Amino acid sequence: MNDYFVHESSYVDDNVVIGKGTRIWHFCHILSRTKIGNNCVIGQNVMIGPDVVIGNNCKIQNNVSIYKGVLLEDDVFCGPSCVFTNVINPRAFIERKNEFKNTIVRKGATIGANATIVCGNTIGRYSLIGAGAVVTHDVVDYALMVGVPARRIGWVCKCGTTLGGKDPVLICKHCGNQYIFKENTLKEIVREQE
Image 1 (cartoon, rainbow, N blue to C red):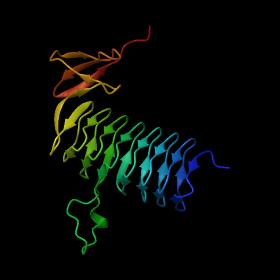
Image 2 (image 1 turned 45 degrees about the vertical axis):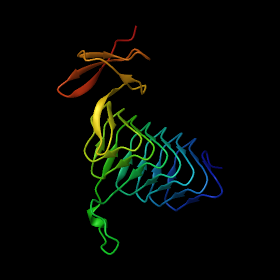
Image 3 (image 1 turned 180 degrees about the vertical axis):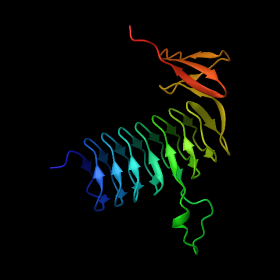
Image 4 (image 1 turned 90 degrees about the horizontal axis):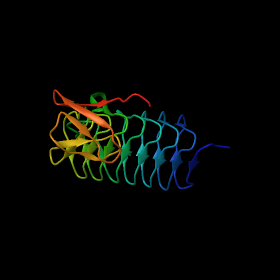
């Protein structure tokens, strides 16, 4: 007996690893040599693979395709109908499988509904890509990105709350996490356990 769930309408090819507690819902296709971590939720009409790695605790909403060359680290959220690519200049009549570019989505990042991630870029830890944004370059950790092409308009906390203010130290009003702004990046201030 499996320790994960796959809806009867979905297809899982050979040589696929699915972690404990993962749920794969209606009309999905998981292609060969794909590895999906523990406790993931794969929504309706999702295609993953081949050769894709999905970390633990990821949520992939309806109508998302994750192609070869994409890596999702742990705790990544992919909103409904967000788009990944793996070739910069595709043509139907020219095979470019040897030109696939890798895309890495770092731990805890969120990609909003209908956002597009152009291949060859890294999405930073705990960043938030707004709905409909088109990411054409690397995204730094904790960045709040919107627009076409996407640009940074602010910062977000690990908990997803927008961080406000212009002080060099930003404090999340929701959870109290603290961050320091330095050299166009945001770094979490790790507090000692009390």
